[in-house]
Amino acid sequence: MKQAILIAAYKNFDHLIEIIDFFNDDTFEIYLHIDKKTKLPKSVLGKLNTVSNLQLLSRRYIVNWGGTNQLNCYLLLAEEALKNRKNIYFHLISGQDYPVKSITEFKKLFENPQKHDYLENFELPRERWNNENGGFDRFLYYYFFDIFYSHKFKKAILFLVKIQKKLSIKRSFPKKIKTYYGGSSWWSLSKDTLQYVIDYTKENKYLLNRMKYTLASDELYFQTVIMNSVYAKNVINDNLRYIDWNPERIGKYSPSPAILDTSDFDKIISSNKLFARKFDVPFSDELKHAILKLQKGE
Image (cartoon, rainbow, N blue to C red; front, side, top):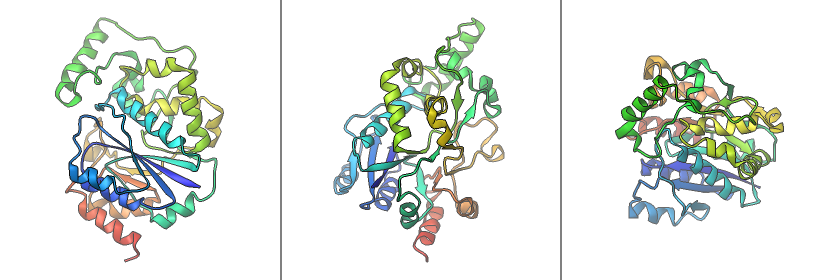
């Protein structure tokens, strides 16, 4: 029985290699998607090719922040990982995450098949998303992040949303969905639950199609599908990721969490989470080394 590590990455390749080295173990299978906008250095590609338990996905999406291809990328990773029948548990992380537990602890926690799914979820509307009408604006208007590079054209895309609001242009909600949910993109799911999401996606294409031009659909889709299913009873509302959304640190409506550093070490360790994010080079290097020392018992 194995655990699958699903990684979506686009930068910080030295850090990415460290994540892969951590999970370079017979107990794990690693599946890696690299943003199509990113050109992999030959040295990195050479290193990846030496990792026997790593599958580098040949199909690659152009992934822009806020766009639907983020969701498509995660679904692709899940579908590939489910092809291996030995995989019983699945962890979705980004290339800016880092494992907090030791490899031994990972093995003990998930060595036997279990029904628990670790997925942050909340019913919409959500107070944290009040600047987006509790999250409903994500569905109601067209966000063209998949068409335009988000960093360069973000202001223009949001300006188009303002025009839609002024003209009362609204998209309809699929009537088949009883309740909409949101939450973090990152999760740890059992095989049965993740297989259900993939099967649902294939059999009910209307919802994935509706997610096109929806803002940050990767923070909506898995929660909405799972929490409207029989698998909702298995969900623990904790994705086991340490993420700092403190508005005093990042701003009230920042779309990204804080970059972690050594000041976060004690909070990360006492949190009892599996992963922490976001790590960035070189700001998080000392923190990463401190966690690594603890994992080694030094």
